Length: 435
Image 1 (tube, helix red, strand yellow):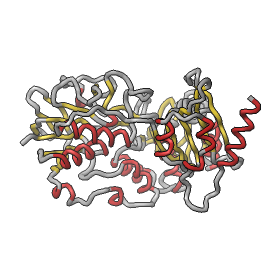
Image 2: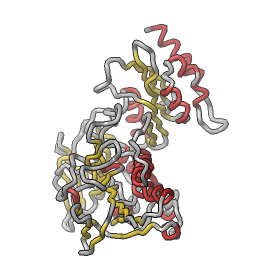
Image 3: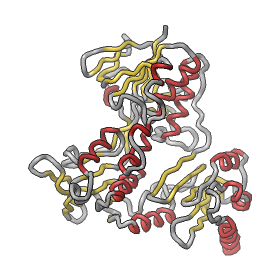
Image 4: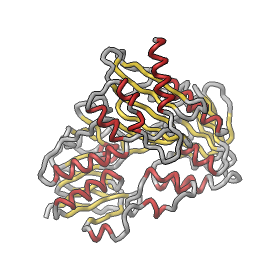
């Protein structure tokens, strides 16, 4: 019986295992050094905030794996020997495979800061990271202040977590406005204000120089590059992005760049070896306007579904369709559909219509082609919109007028929420008349 071994029990690895089982009787083994069972990584923050327990983040009963004949092996893979199709583990044991799927996800970026490996300096990615922050920042007596380095989505999650336990937070962001490599100017400025309104000490255009240690090897303080200011703290959140978690593959024959290089069918250069999720890098560049590496939950799930078909004898290309994503900035929900580029590096043909509510917690930005008026994408903050509606409008290549006039059809806010589509339409008409 063919043996498929999957390294990594995140959303990508578990999805490919489930779909191989749906379509075949192959032997399946999932290998992970992180946890015994799959859990929803995006829910880690809610455990710390007291909204749920760890077991609530596990979508399947522990009996699910045995029932579905998916073997689980806890262990850390040190080397992959592709000629003999053998995995070698840190404990000295080995495992043979017929087909191998690499789904090892990401690890937090570290940029060689002095003190970056001290106790109390950490990312927020793994179950071990959650355990570490619970140990080092259980309350505001143990942790008098935390410093977060890096202004992305994980950084804002960590700020919200610490804020929930009344732990003072200083937030160092290298850019001159929060996440402005992704968000257009108006949205980024709104999020700056929102962070400060939550009593978080946001420091823009500010870099970390070093993390200082106390006599026990724990974080004591950080020093700012620009001013030399020293800030006392007990926890440093290193959230300046993530990188593919592939160090153990570097000694193998499997080709890597930043990630494991794959073609559109998610195959590596070695027969019977595949890579999916955060650790996979498209060899021929990103699909459409997507990046070659996509560290996004839903793309990992899609890759798992596609690869399962290929492994079960129905070869498919990975075609993720229109870009979409969602997140939260403290209590403001964010969704994006299609492409809305930040001001830096925005294509010449892309125009934006921006509307912001007077309460400074709701806004939308609609991107369109300045010549053809074709709708290109939308960012929405504080107003829920339907994915399937925008996906259809992007496929139908609707124009911006159509989208603005039909926004009520896309609204997905709960019953009795106030609606703002009339205000948005009036603002759009007014802006067009003055252009």
